[in-house]
Amino acid sequence: MDQLILIIEDNEQNMYLMTFLLEKNGYKVNQARTGKEGIRLALEVQPDAILLDIQLPELDGYGVAKALRNNHALKQVPIIAVTSYAMVGDKEQILAAGATGYIEKPINPNTFIQQLQEYLPPLPDNGRT
Ligand code: MN
Image: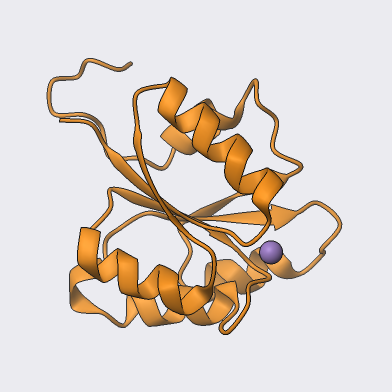
């Protein structure tokens, strides 16, 4: 079964790029463009991992990560923050808020999938090494 990745990101360029790379590599993708929509969708679809932008409308990435970790059904899901390289302090803060790890912006198309896979649970059939 394909793994499902939920992307919570309000920047269309980043959303497009991450979606393109994930689908090209056999993942299913759900998209949310605000923090609240992201939480709602996460509860609904129970994704295998969540890619989370920090600066989001309605509720920022810190708030989203905290809300997800407070929800029993989503306690274990890998949350990978997508953080701007320049934002010193973001990484520590988002990890403290409950994120599993982070990937730096700008997204590098050559390494993005590999970076993500470090945080994903292994596939049941060990098909991907
Ligand atoms: Mn943003």
